[in-house]
Amino acid sequence: MPAGPRVVHDDEQLQIVIWDRVVTSRWRGAPTEDALRILGEHQRTLTDSFDERRIVALTIVGPRATMLLSGEARKEAEVQAKVGRETLIALALVVEGEGFIAATARAVISGVQLAVRNPYPTKVFAIVDDARLWIEERLRAEGHVATAAGLHGAFDAGLGGQD
Image 1 (cartoon, helix red, strand yellow):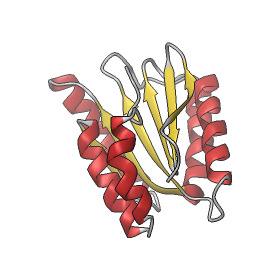
Image 2 (cartoon, rainbow, N blue to C red):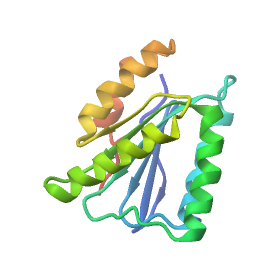
Image 3 (tube, rainbow, N blue to C red):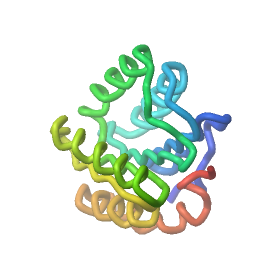
């Protein structure tokens, strides 16, 4: 089993944490073209470290973040999404927060994911712990039993990132 989670990027806008074949991106602000490119580079590096080139992504939208993208950021997000079609085992999206705005954001993201029809399982959550359980199931289903077994400890050690 690998060492604990590694923070590979951390600034006021985005934190990226990697452990085994799981990459967490915790958004603290609106995704920019540069931040999305940085995330893509770290995802590619992680993907390239496995023979079968498959990883799990956890995206967390913090309570103060927004998902309003500029035109350039939207284009970069599309590039990343195309790569993900080949490399993702699963994608868990967490929109943190309570109330109408957070619930509406989760509903909109769920609708978009249905329309996109990704070739990998995708699910939207309100809390990280629920996403962790779902990720464990996806990892087991893909035969990554040891990674699934260590996931709880990895989250306890910081895989979910910090806001």
